[in-house]
Structures are given as C-alpha cells and as structure tokens.
Image 1 (cartoon, rainbow, N blue to C red):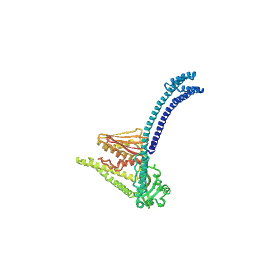
Image 2 (image 1 turned 30 degrees about the horizontal axis):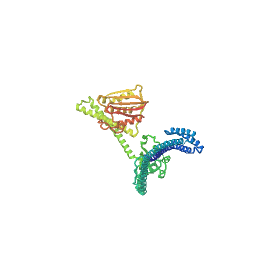
Image 3 (image 1 turned 90 degrees about the horizontal axis):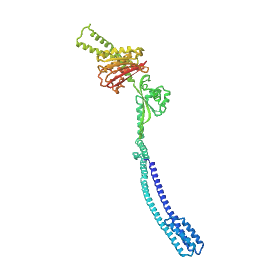
Image 4 (image 1 turned 135 degrees about the vertical axis):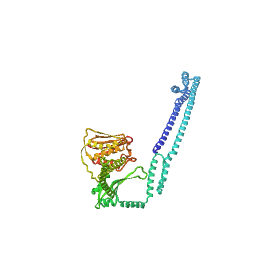
Length: 575
C-alpha cells in the first residue's frame, strides 16, 4: 500500500472517530438539557407559584393587594399543569379561594387552602424526584456509551500511533543507514523494502545507484585507459576496415585500413558527423547509404564492393553492426552506435574466379570425349554393328546412363560458370508456349515411362507466346520436370500447368512425391544443397541455375510443398 494511502486512511479514521465522539457527546448533552429544562419549566415554576400563594395567603387580611397577588399566581399555575393530579389540586385551590374571597377571616378556609397548596407542591416534588432519576439514567447511559466509544477510539488511535509511524520511520532509518554506508564507500550496501509503496520504488532506484557506484568503484581509471588503448591498437591492426559511429552518427574511431581505402586522414573523420564526411567522399557515401536510408534492399547491401586500393582492384564485403548495451540495473537495451566493417575478400574472390575458370575449362574439355563415348554407345546398340549378349547389353546400358548423367553434370557446370562470370547471353524473343512444353515432355517421357508416371499438361488457350529465352526457359522447365519424375512415386501423375496470373505467365509442375519439409523450402535453390536423406543422384546445382536463369529474365521462381502430398514448383515471367 502506498504511504499516502496509509496516511489518508489513518488520519481519516481518526477524523471519523472525532466526529463520532462529538456526535455522541452532543446528543447526550441535548438529552440532559431536555430533562433539566422539563424539571425547571414544569415543576420548579409550580413550586414558585405555590410559595407566592402561601405568602399572599398570610397577608390577605392586612394587605388588600395580597388577593391580587394570590390570584395572579393561581392563574399562572392554572396555565402550568403538567403532572397527574395537579389539575384537581389546582381546581380545589380555585374553589376554596373563591369561598375565601367571600369571607376573608375564615381561618378554616385558609387552612384548607394551605393543605391544597401543600398537596400541589408535594405532587411537583415527587415529579421532580422522578425526572431527576430519568436525568441520572440519561447521564449514566451517556457515560457508558461515551466510555465504550472513547475506549474503542483510543485502541484504534493507539494502534495507528504504534504502527503508522514505524511504517514510515523504519524504512527511513534503514535508508539513512544505507546512505551512510554508501558515503563510507561501502557500495555493496542494498536496501530491501517489500511491497509496492513509495519506499519500494525508492529502494529500486537506490539499489540501481549503488550498483552503478559499485561498478564504477571496482573499475580503475588505469584499467579503463589500458583497455581503451588495447582496443584501439587491436582495431588499428585489423586487416578489415573499421569505422565506429555513435548514436548521433558522430565518428568515434577509424582504423588505418579504413583510412587507406578512403584516402582520407584521421582528423577528417574523428569527431565529425559521418554524413558530413560523405559529402566529399563517394566511397563513404556508398558505405552509409543504408544508415541514411534504411529502405534500401538487403540484396543491394550484400553486393561486393569493388574498390581500387594502391592501384589494384580489391573486393570488399560490407557489414554494418548495431551496438546495443544493457545498462546496469535496467531492463531494456540501449542503442549506442554502429560499426561499419569492410572485409577484404579479394583472395577468396580470386580463388573463386580461378575455380570458375577451371570448371569452365574442364567442363568444356569433358564435353567432347563424353560426346564421343555417347556416340560409341549408340553404335554398339546398332544391330548392324553386331549383336550383343545380355551381359554386354547391361554393360552398354550402364555406360549409356553414366554418359547421360556426366553430360548433364557437364552442362550444369558450364551453365554455372557462365552465371558466375556474368557472361550469360539471353536471347529473348517470342517463343511458342505449347512447343516448349511438348518438347520438354518429350525429352523426359522415357524416364517417366520407366516409372509408369503419367505427365499431363494444361495450357491456357488464350496463351500462345511468351517473350523469353526459349532455350534457357525450356532448360529450367525440363530440370523441374526431371526432378519431379525422380522424386515421384511409381504409377503417379505429374501435372504441368501454364496460366496467366496478374499479367504474369506462370509455369507450374505438380508431382505426387513425398514432399519437402518446411525447414528446407528456402534452401532448395541454394547451390550444392541436397535435402538430407534423399537417395537420388544429383549435383545440387539444377535448381540454383534455374533460379539464376529465371531471375535474369526478370521472373521469379518458388516452391510449395506438403509432406505426403507432393510439391509444386512454379516460375513466372512477364507476359
């Protein structure tokens, strides 16, 4: 509970108790006043009137005004009849006084009147005694009720007096002690207040402060300086170019390799805004374009940068790292800057080019002997050359299959080297869709017949031609179809569909194989990737080359699959 809530509750309760006690006291005082006022008005006045009548009766013979005085008090008494029997006594006095007025010397009448007045006084004296008892009872009740209420209020007030100050004073005392400990450089001191009160929030802030003070006290300036120098030396001696900026894009450090690449001096970098440096340097402007404009595509980010350094062509891979730290005692990380790194991949690029040239040369050289082997196999299969026994036919068939596989691998490697060297030539012109599909089906029909697989095609009758490279697009469709045959079950169906999809001509090949697990769907177009557990032969290049061929023509290629149902490979080109 919040301290403010506790104080409001305590003070409010005390205020309520004061109001209750005041109300009870006022109510009982009013009752006592009412009882005493009743005695004064009803009985005391009657006694006073009776006394005056007795005095007037004694002087009635000597003083003529006594009759008027007696009559006056008698009239007042007639208007102040409040008790039982008082009316009859007053009437007797009136009758007897009337008789006395006729004979004022009659002592017997005077004696009778005195008795009547004494009876009237006795009635009121008895009434006074009864009403006094009622007033005493009211007073006793008042004392009892106020005593109980006062005791209850005292207990509540005493409880508040014991607990409320301690709830406030104890945390303050503990906090004061902890502050003294911090002042004495005991930064390990912590306060622990339970609950969600202001003291709990104060304890959290105090502990955060203590943790930071402890962190600062345990670190030494010499250690910080040595660590800073060590990091600077490490960065300066890195073979990669490194530029560090803070959250406001001000340059914090730059190593020698970055200075060599950009051709700038250190004082042109340090302490300046990176965008100001980029104004006079094209390379720096290219490096920070993703920082200035986050909307730039990731593909553009991943492209190698070709930079001439010391008269030599070098290739660099750029990487921008966000630096986020978790401050002591806080829950959320804070962005404090970025590091721009240029990794020199020139040696790897040279090795890759050498590999590409090697593959291109070897593949090209392999095609001639493989073609010769294929021609020799065809001659051996010709019966005019001579008949082969069963064992020889099996050997020739094996040689034929291996030759076809080698020729396909060689073709894929040649296509790959063309893609890597960037010398792919596209011959884009109107191509007949039906002819393309039929030629692809015919090229793969024997493989399908071997597994008793039926190939069906469905072409939108409104689609006749497509503006594409006939040879490369046919190669892609044939590669997808051959994969579908390879991974489909026997006695199944394969469907080739060509349709118009939002001004895009879409080719799709649907098989009835096992399917591809979801975790591998985004990897099947990666070079040399093969789904783990597959037993079919292949280089893992076909789909990668297909992707390159389709994207080179401005299209897209993708796959959908469901385990146990099959896969659908589809690519689309502009109509």
